[in-house]
Length: 111
Image 1 (cartoon, rainbow, N blue to C red):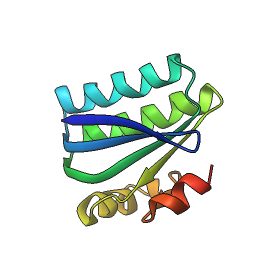
Image 2 (cartoon, rainbow, N blue to C red):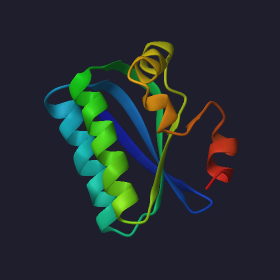
Image 3 (cartoon, rainbow, N blue to C red):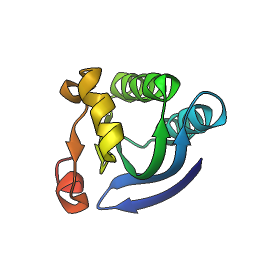
């Protein structure tokens, strides 16, 4: 999995690419989110447009990252999850937990 970091209007955006699956993908996401929290980031947007696969470990890591962010007084939101990823969010009913956006400007403005 590839993770690129950028900032826009006080929001840290992590551009995710590849697979969020058991092993390195889920672990990389965990490390990236925890590092952001330790560095004082409070508004975190995960751009999922280039995510190709998410398994149950990946979903678990997203929930863990969301919880860790909330416990540190921050906010974690999702941007552009592909259709299969979005289906998983609906099936697991996590769509009721995560704020999901299709437009980056709107997502950044929501913080």
